Length: 293
Image (cartoon, rainbow, N blue to C red):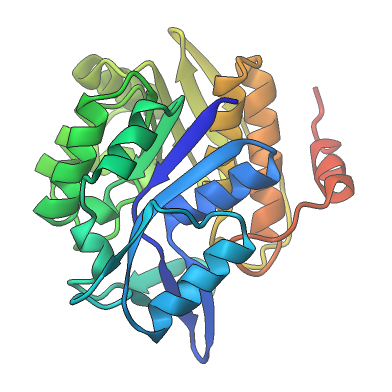
């Protein structure tokens, strides 16, 4: 089996009184499971009731293993999620928390060495301990390295983004994020070309919210305008898109076909509440049927 290692934060997203297990790497892992990929998830929780709850959740979803470390001092992360009138989410993230202290133990090193792909983001790398652990993993594996930029102000520096991007084979970000990283008054295609020139990334994917996505892959651009759905909330839509892209790349599917499927699954997730709705293939097929060409 082609093993995918998702590395980074796991947490509780608090929507008022309601709490849901979250964290982009964990969400990507759950979507990969729904797409029948072989997935491992690495993170760190606190030795507290919230951490016990996350461990139970991960066990129920087939994502718990020795790669889930426990921290005796730092608490499990609980994030406050606020949705605006357009159902776009903003996050209030405490610091420090348990996943700021992920350690490069033998179990994690072995998992990285045996992985086909490693998926990572910027949030868990906001402090040096977890960042250094990730860089150690990336420097000692032949796996495909997938960087989900996922900027969460103020929890990043451009220097850290530069470092993480320089290790990546595949980078996924949104149109606001590439503007921050590349800057200047350029078209999206020019920004993507500048990004590739700077980091020599094999595949660059930029999502555009309700306007679809652009992928630069093997020196060619591929675009999709997106599918129109009634939005429940946007939490997890980008994670599902990325999971579909990763699965397609690993299985060497035609990139335009992957882009259509990723856009449709992202739209399906956006039409529901929460980050990880159970896939309804009939609904996804109906979304794809919007495709005109």
